[in-house]
Structure formats: structure tokens, C-alpha cells
Image (cartoon, rainbow, N blue to C red; front, side, top):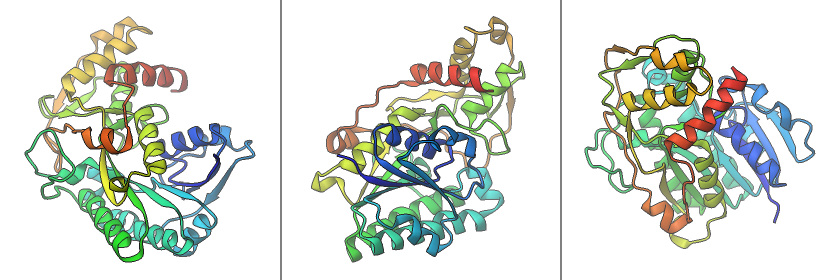
Length: 322
């Protein structure tokens, strides 16, 4: 069955991969992006497809949201200003986009009567919670403005379900990585940043001693979770949130070792690049590990890529595209 799908943040890392996947499956996909952090090059190959269209616009404008949502069956909402450090430097803009823009999307989805809005939530919502692994029902206090915005999204989604009957599912992403993730700029994520530095024989800088750990999640696992959430019809699967992760954690020292191994297939001298250690970063959570039992049970989520398999694929993409 073919659907009409709106994907916001369509020119960004996750959004562009979702566009590519759903266009490939024959769905009618409309991409929305203001191109503040996304790149048209990410969706360039889709422009010639009959079942893809693009609208340049900002989710902070309600009229734009109404226009984008009109006639759509499902909305996959990825548009946001990511990055904890960015939100610490400029909390006002992060709030405007992540909270104000999110509310606009909820209103537009409600008014248009879409079947479901699946939205990008965040593992940052767990904040200072010490419990491991992270289970959806146990969170702590947020440690950054970004984390607050993503938690507010969940609260708003819950209210819109209970008040207006809008079906929503939030996906708490854990450190997503993979093809098309931008290695440039002040707020680049660690995997594309480290990959680019190692390829250039530059020493990557770890914040801290490298023992902080993350549940790194390859993009194809995230695509699977979005599709399963979009189509989920289990009554317990609506108006709730799910961890989207692999369910394993790796510290940053091991991450760099694995990256070097993958890159050394192309250039063995990369194995000799040293690592630099710097000060800890404000707002960083020491350890992150997800329980994915709920997503497995209610969505049928089964991640196919562990960290090493994902890194091998990502490195091949970066080697060909950087």
C-alpha cells in the first residue's frame, strides 16, 4: 500500500535517509526543510523522482506547516536544532525551533487529520537518571536546554493525543550515525568528525578520558524504527515513546579504535594517528545504554546493524564522499 508521507528536516542527515528509503518503496514523499543545517545535496538524487517533492520552509511558520501537512497520511517529524552545545550557546533559538516549531507541527497534523505523527525524540531526555539500561518510563532531570526541548515535545504530544485524539509516537534516538551525517561545523557529531579527522591524519580530540560511553545507533536501524512506528497498529504503541538504539554501549576510546580499524582498510597509516584528550563538555551525560525491549515487543523492532557493521558501512560512504 502506498501512502502520502511528509518528512520534515528532509535535507538533514536522518530526514534525507528517510526520504530516500520511502521514495524507494514507492510512497509519495514531500520533504520540508529550511536548509539552516540541512543540505540540498543530500536529496539531489531524489529531485528527478516523480514521487518526491520538496518544499523549502520553516516549521516556525504555522502556515508553512499547514501547507506541508495538507493531504498527507503520515508525518515523520525530524526537523529540529540538534546538539547540546548549540543549545547551551543559544537556548532561545533551540527553543523556538524545537518547541515552537514542534507545536506548530502538532497543530497542523491535528487540523489536517493525519493518521499519525512519528517524531524524533531524544535520549537526552534521560538527563541525570543513573539507571542503566535506560527504560522509557524512568527519566531524570534534563542537563541541557536541548534536552528540555525534547522532553517538552513528549509532553505536548501526550496532551495532543488526550485532548484532540492525534496519534503520535516518539522515537528516542540514541547517538545515530551513518551516511550523509555532516562532519563539518562546530556541532558535528563525534563519528563523522572523528572519521574526517582520521582520514586527514589529524588527531581526534576526546572530551574527557574516553571512558564515557554511548549506545551508537546506525541509520538503517533508525529507518526501520520509523517505518514500524508509522505502521504500528498495536493499541499500546500509540501515544508513547520508544528507545531507538542497538542496545549495547561503547566507550569513546573503543570507538576510535574501531574507526581506525575500518579506515585502515584504505590507509594503514591511520592506525598510527594519536588521540588527544581535552576537558569534559558541559551537559554531557557520562553513560548511555538503551533497553529496546519495548520497541521489540510493541513495534517488532529488530536492529540489524551493530556498531562495527554500521561503522564499516559509514566509513565506505565517507571515503567515497569526503
